[in-house]
Length: 116
Image (tube, rainbow, N blue to C red; front, side):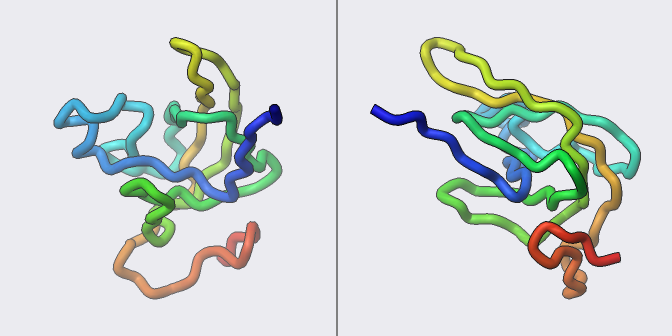
């Protein structure tokens, strides 16, 4: 038996509407308002590793690796693994660095490097 670990180059959270209808916890969803400089909590199911040494994209997901274009650039500040009801989770904090217009075709990241 191995150890299942996922390495994520972005932070993929659900739309706020999932929290409002009771399908997801607040920290599993994108904040209602994205404001540069604010710090938020996140929660993801599974044992996940994130890059701490720079900015990464914040994207929305509908599940099954269906991801939006980046909606913001964030910096992961902390990440902790824990068990709840014998399920692995990852929780942490991130800071919003810049907010992007999802309809703007401009490319904001090249691999893990933010294009400014």
